[in-house]
Length: 473
Ligand SMILES: Cc1cc2nc3c(=O)[nH]c(=O)nc-3n(C[C@H](O)[C@H](O)[C@H](O)COP(=O)(O)OP(=O)(O)OC[C@H]3O[C@@H](n4cnc5c(N)ncnc54)[C@H](O)[C@@H]3O)c2cc1C
Ligand code: FES
Ligand code: FES
Image (cartoon, rainbow, N blue to C red):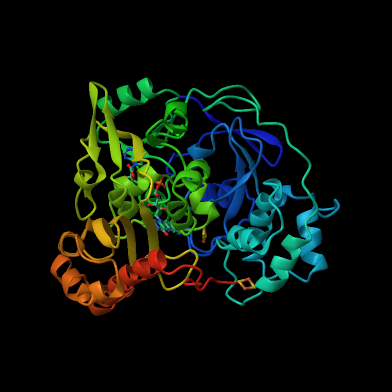
């Protein structure tokens, strides 16, 4: 088993550590780089933000080091706040902009803000308010210092162009490729480079934890202090990272991150793209995958209602073969799926909507950014003149699993698509769902919110020119 190899703040490193070590713990406790802070240890606050550049990529991405396992750095270039400038060197442009705008806050939040700003600048995006807010949404200051930080982002000079990082998937820049398998302290981590290797490993170790971005699984390590005996990572499998617009459907590989999938999802399903932009933060979306959201099968998994309303399918692969299931049949219960122990999600297929369909997706949460849904909904409508030809309505946050609202769909089919047709929506939704009450919302609130989303869809698809959305900023 080989050592992990990565480049940290410009210096090649070769490391051995138990694979269930978070990058944050390793940075602070082993590398003694304590500029990266721990605020929440659950991906919410951004104090632990670092930037990584994977092999073949030409820009750095911000990620939460509290959720990342050390072997996920294998083959990457990594920069922490200490890498911005030396102790006596000139300030990095990000630091200078923070100084110039009085944007520095306390020592807990500022390093994370600086690294999120570094990634924003490295991405070469225009300094538009919406993009700056999106780039900083994963960094919290409990003391409201945001305006000056947003100003600092506006003033950032352009970053110099970077050549793509050397190496292929699973390899490292400094000292040649690692072998993609690491073991230390009784824990093993496999990062196969091909789908065939992945399937062999999955068949040999059906009990191993299958890891994609780790934004769900990482919490078991950072919050519950769990150590995984054996992990198989999908990260280095290039076949799984593919996102492709086929003739009839969008094909999203089972290892593709939200950030990788977003450009094509935006192009083909803009409402789904807008919803995905509200999943966590950029730090989360740079790691998290659609496949991970599906396999977690959370009742409030944001992508599931869209996938159901859009009739998406999953391609499941095992060493001996493959099968295709509708997403609706894949999710079998509360956090339960039809995935067999030796299977993986190889691909998610999103069939294109025929012309003339209306499609919308809505998320109701306490905060606009970086929050978990109370209710999430997706609708696809086929109209026949003024009447409902077919309505597909899928909801999350209303039951143990996201599901279509069968009674609502049946009742509206063939009826006029007007507000008058909506008189009984609350009752129909109550036939479909008996939501739980929890800290995000009571059962009555959820039913009313869901009914409100149906009305909103009706208004948005029939009223033209009227602004119907109140946006943040
Ligand atoms: C701060 C924070 C904010 C979040 N915000 C949101 C949000 O707004 N909305 C939302 O829906 N979710 C949210 N999440 C949850 C999480 O980000 C998503 O569910 C994400 O899509 C998980 O993907 P991942 O690649 O990180 O999965 P991982 O954590 O790597 O894995 C999750 C599960 O999926 C399985 N899995 C992964 N890939 C495959 C595959 N190819 N085949 C089979 N099984 C697989 C794993 O074995 C595991 O059981 C948030 C999480 C955090 C920490
Ligand atoms: S410590 Fe809060 S996001 Fe990592
Ligand atoms: S949390 Fe650092 S100043 Fe507010």
